[in-house]
Length: 74
View 1 (cartoon, rainbow, N blue to C red):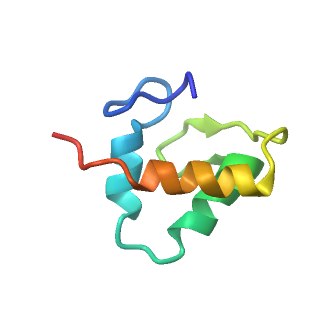
View 2 (cartoon, rainbow, N blue to C red; view 1 turned 45 degrees about the vertical axis):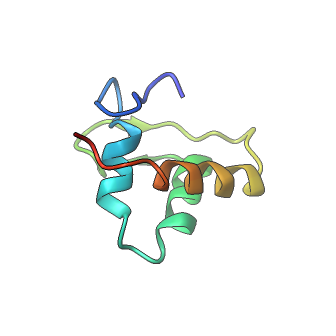
């Protein structure tokens, strides 16, 4: 979680920015949980999201729900 700020980009986008992008996507919780566990590249430019293989599926889903619950950036 050190790569993401609450609102603004650090290395990766801020949690509020992620929530804003996916807020109306009904598949977002599962999609984000997959990105947390498996990593991704190209979603936010050339930044690489490394996989977090130590996080279980239920933990990844809970984290995804938390990210999606963040308010819109100011």
